Length: 365
Ligand code: AMP
Image 1 (cartoon, protein in one colour):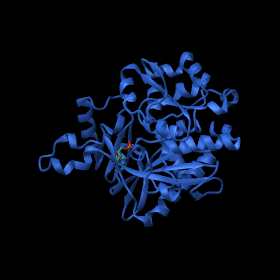
Image 2 (spheres, rainbow, N blue to C red):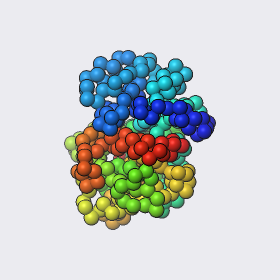
Image 3 (cartoon, rainbow, N blue to C red):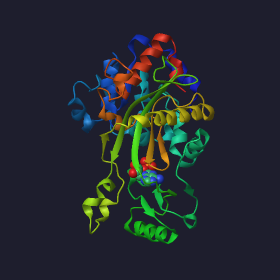
Image 4 (cartoon, rainbow, N blue to C red):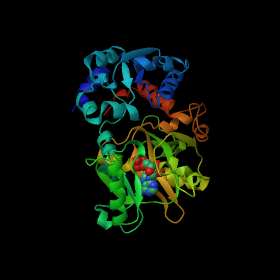
């Protein structure tokens, strides 16, 4: 594992007047670059050759400099890492960045300063660890069934290998579990080697609030140390949302949880305190479990059940694609900032304020 000391040594050689914000051209990079430019940073996009024209098609969000690669795994090569260092780069790792490069390779051999606490990657990548985190935070999460024989109510079956929700299914008892599982295996949607994770199915409305936590120039909800901002909320678009259109002869493709987009959402105002306190509990537990905790943006995936309140089912410990809805801010950001503020810009502002306060080292763990 790459030592923090080595990363901080690299930061200490940086020209603080010429910091660049860098990312892989995918996921939420246009928002990240756009926000970084608003805060006056240079921007660097690591881009696959074929995709270059598409990233040049948005001049206000297009990075000033491109590092062209054939495969995103090349970010680990010295050629790319050295170029990033020479350009005083701070890398923002979004979801695709982590997925394309891999958690372990990133932790083992990426020596370019990467914004945030790297230790969180291990906590979010492992569902059991996430549960331990929720437990510590005192949050409500769906009951977990260790074996199909334990299923005693509607269960939701997630498969580790099934990306983006494909292959997920519902089962009300172990017979239904086995018959659906066998069908998915036969169809090849699920592989024998994929590990199923069975949890209680939560009925209700889904919300994906986007938070931001920092101790540097804190804003938002005051915590023991630092501040927690509610920057925006979205809702993911999945085929299952429109399942009624397939009735009465249900077409199986509707029974699918693959995310294909995001919709903007505002919360009923009386629910905001619970959404903020849920985020605050998760931050507090993260500080205890992997100090200094979750830094910068994160998202908690939750379901609101009218009888039970909010139940959380997953955390994404970095910028999520749902924030792409708000390059100029959400309905909530004007209440915190005088200027349009996206999550991408908030990251850049955090870096800028850390530089001004002489605290840049506190953004890298
Ligand atoms: P995930 O991979 O955990 O982000 O889940 C993908 C999608 O599956 C979510 O956006 C929800 O629509 C659905 N989902 C996940 N967990 C549950 C659950 N416990 N109960 C009901 N729906 C769920």
